[in-house]
Image (tube, rainbow, N blue to C red):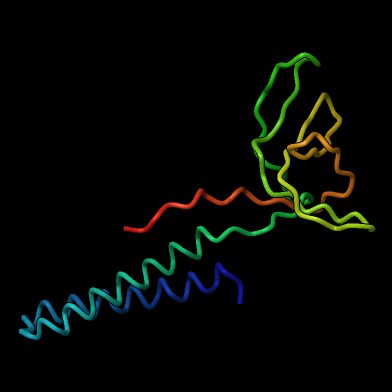
Length: 135
């Protein structure tokens, strides 16, 4: 099952659960425990959908490149992406790097944070958010 399909199924369950909650409220259910349970289930389902939507995935370079912005440095004008995770499929040592996509005129290449040029980049993904303690 693909992530988009899973989100669709969970959204349907959320709609059903919301209708059940409306029915329970219309019937003026005195069962506080039942209403609390419905609310907790709805919150958990919504959190699941959000987690699936935010789940990082590898994006094939053939599908699209990261968003580029213009930079000017000692080499002149160029476009480059923010840092992303890069999957380099070189035959000797396939690896994951932190790098960026660079474009000058109609030439595009990838380089690591350490300025190593990568020649067989197949996919990329945004960097994850920095760790924050849960409250």
